[in-house]
Length: 169
Image 1 (cartoon, one colour):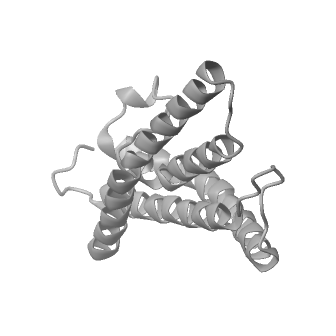
Image 2 (cartoon, rainbow, N blue to C red; image 1 turned 45 degrees about the horizontal axis):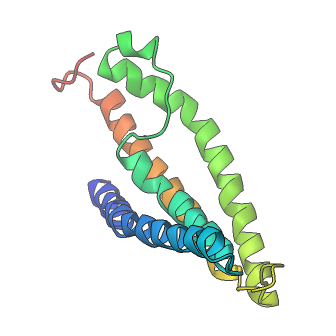
């Protein structure tokens, strides 16, 4: 169990670190586009499409990293008063909703990715870049989020089941 959790954590950690540099080309491209558009009255036909793809990549592929570092929004007004074991138990109870929703996203995105790859789908813009690489990356992002959820579930289960092992009860 620890080996699986460590592998998933490591993959999501490195994915998040590598993807953090994606913001730099987004800033550079946006700056270039603004300068070209407003200073030279010569907008590009491709920056918008590239920025959409980079933002999609950053958002979905970074979801597992965000879960790893507890960066998602939580409502912990009541649970902040609970012990660690009780918080873990509450997380286990609500995990079904997480697995159901992310599982459906992964499944549907996977089907869309496969269909997009087979069709060699492209954006409907003038530049018309391929969209299937982004859809495949989104599927991988949902998979990594799902696996991080499994790792968290296993950790919470270990906390709940560790009766009398020094964990706050």
